[in-house]
Image (tube, rainbow, N blue to C red; front, side, top):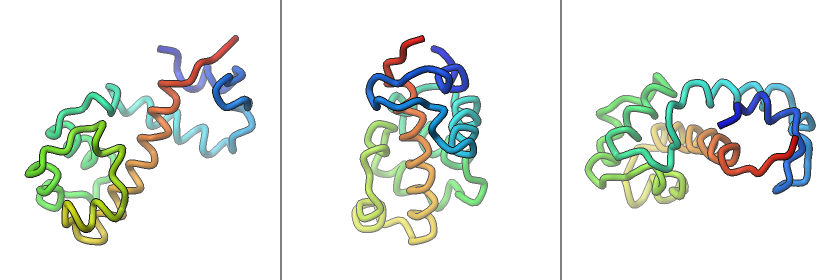
Length: 120
């Protein structure tokens, strides 16, 4: 897998834009996320989901993410969870749900990077 840093210099066929058109702060954040995430988030088990979320945001605590463990929310499912689902179905408190939503948005950017078809 090529790093997102390398990909930033390539044309993205799927989106029809250059990665260099992204704000540098966004590109840097995606690069940092890629370095921290060791595997494809879509393949995470529910245990990995909780562990990675706690690692990504130190304010998230295992005890607050208990509903993700109880419902066995795997990575691919987490990526499809909206704020509403986190609040009403999983019954996370508002602060936790917002923090998880923020991390899910970042994970989606990483996943998009894994899925992009690039040309040199």
